[in-house]
Image (cartoon, rainbow, N blue to C red; front, side, top):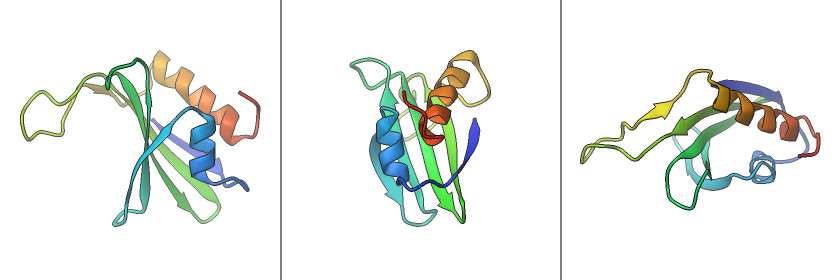
Length: 103
């Protein structure tokens, strides 16, 4: 699920932390920052977001990782990428934070 927000005074790191996400890594090639928010005490399921700032906008690519990759050496895993009820609820949380509403 792709979301677009106007840039604010706060950094994307600060905004994502406010939404409950932890920083994972920054891809120097694509300039995307990776964030995750776990839904349990284990590694999965978790929300996974890639965030990129360009000009006056912040782009968030959000999906839900259901479980770890099934095959050795594979990065593919069971996940939800398209609009679904759970992704829509998570998108609403991000919208509130990025639009400077309280959460």
